Length: 471
Image 1 (cartoon, rainbow, N blue to C red):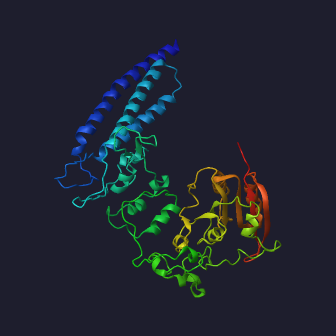
Image 2 (image 1 turned 90 degrees about the horizontal axis):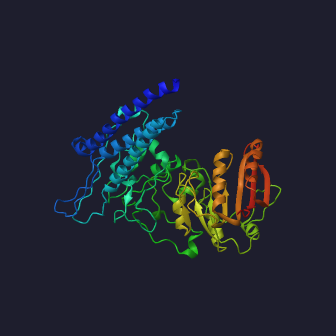
Image 3 (image 1 turned 90 degrees about the vertical axis):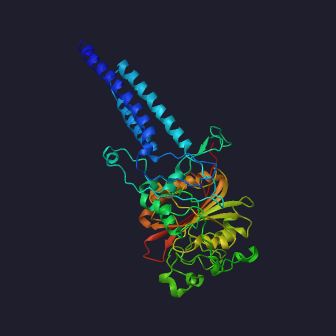
C-alpha cells in the first residue's frame, strides 16, 4: 500500500513536468530562430560586393550557442532520470520522450552547422574580412557549470572549427562522410587568448611572423594547431638550394633562413665557440657542426654507450629502408643513413635555433612534431625508429609508455627500436629499464655505461631491440 501511495504523486509530478517542459523547449527553439537576428552580436562573415549573384546565408552565432545550451541542459536532465532508482513506467516513458527531444536538438544543431556558409576564394573584385567577436562569456554559463561552447573569440577560428560540408549537400564523398570536421587540439580550449591571437590575421594576406607562438602552443598541448588562410613568410633573398651531392655536409646559406625569431642572426653564430652562452639553445649543442664525427669511429664497449650505424645495419642486412629519428637534430643521423640508401624522417622542434630549416636545406625530410603528438604514420610501416639524447631522466613513466607504444605501433614486425644514449640517475635506471623490458622486444644490442661528463651519478643506456610479431 505504501508503494502505491508514493507512486501516484510521482507519476502526477512527472506528467506535469513533461507538460511544462515540452512547450518551453519548443518556444525556446522558435524564439531562437525568429528573434535572435535582432540581438546585438558581432557577425563573422565574408562581405562580398552587392552585385555578386552568389549571395551567402548568414546565421547569427546566437542560434548555435543557444541550441548547444539546450542540448547540455537536456543532457543533464537525462542523466538525472537515468540515475533514478524508481522502476516506474512513467519515469521510463518520460525519459524516452526527453530522449526524443534531445535527438531532435542534435539534428537541428547538425542542420545549423550544415547551413554555415562555404567560403570560396575571393576573386579580384571581392573583399574578404574576418571580424573578431570579443564578447565575454555569459555569467550564467559559468555558474551553471556548463562549458560555454563559444570558447574562442576569433571569428576565423570559429570558421575553421565548424563542420565543412561537402559542396553537394547531403552527399557523402570518397571518405564516407558528408562533412569534414577540422582537427584542433583539446588543450587549445584552455589557451583561448593565445589561440585567438594566433588566429588573428588578414585572410589571403601575409601571415604574422609568429612561428615561436605556434610552437609554444604545440608544446603546451594545443596540437594540432588550426590551419590558417594566409601566406607564410619567406626569406627576402632566398637562393637556390645546394645540389643533393653536396648539400648533406655543406653549411646552408644564411639568406635561406628567416632569423627574426632566433637569438643567432647568422649560421656562424650557431657554431662559434664565442657564442656558446648566447645562441639560444643548449640541447644538441654541436648539432650545427655538420660533421660525421662520432658516427663512424669504432667504440669501446667499456666506456662508450654508442653503437655505429654499420654495426646496427649489419643486424638486418638489406632490410632497413625507411624509418624515423626522434631526436634534437639537424639531420646528421638521417644524412648518414641516406648515404646507406635508407630514408629517415627527422622529428624535432625548433628548440631556439633553425633545426627544421637546416634539415630541409641539407636535402632531408624534417618532421615538425612534439613529443606529445601521435606519430603521423600508419601501423606496422617503419623499419627502424631511432632516438638519441632526447628521452632521458626528465620524462615520467606514463608519458614514456605512451611514446614507446606509439613507436611500437608504427614499427613493422621484426623492425628495430634503437635507443641511443638514454641517460638518467643511477637510482632511476632500473625504473626506466623495466619500462623498455615490458615491451617484450628481443635484445640485439644492450649496453649500460657511466655518464662521466657531470657529477658521476648518472648512467647511459643504449639498446637495439627487435619488435616481435603479435597476431
